[in-house]
Image 1 (spheres, rainbow, N blue to C red):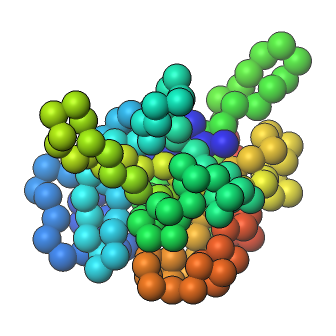
Image 2: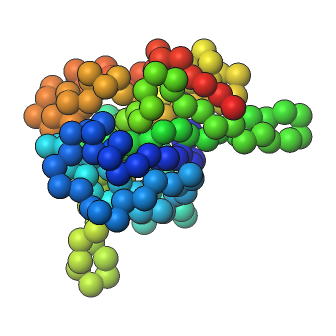
Length: 191
C-alpha cells in the first residue's frame, strides 16, 4: 500500500530529473502528499501536469489510491488505464506505518541512489454532473521486497529510471510493461 508520499524537490531538480519542457513556475515541493491532493505527474513526452490522487468510482466509499499489480489486468477499474493511460508519479519518499504491538510507527522510506524516483501510476478520466471531464491518478503497488516486508506486505512499484520510457510508451506490448510491476531491487533507507 502507498497512502502518503513526499516530493521534496526543487523546480530545477524536477526539471533536470525528467528533462521536462515547459514547467509551471509555481511548483513547490511537498513534505507530505495525501490522497485527493493535487500533485505533479509525468505523462508521455516528459510533460508535467497536475492531477488529483485517487480514482473516484461510484461503488467505492473513498478514492481508490492504489491498484494492485497482480490483478491490474483483471480488474475492470484498472485494466484500461494500465493498457492505455500510464504515468509516472515523482517522489522523494513514501510513508508506511509499522505495527509494533498496539502502536503504529510512521516510517519514511526513500531510495539512497535515486533522489527523485518514479512510482508507476495510471490515469482515468471521469465526467462530473455538468459533463465536464476531469482526470485522477492511482499508484500501482506490488508485494513488499525483503526490506519492506518487516514493515508492511505491500509497497509502491518503483520503476528503474531506465524502464521509465517503456512504462510511458502507450504503444508498448502490455506484457513487457506488466513485467516492470515488481518490487524494487534498489536499497531502501527506512527512518
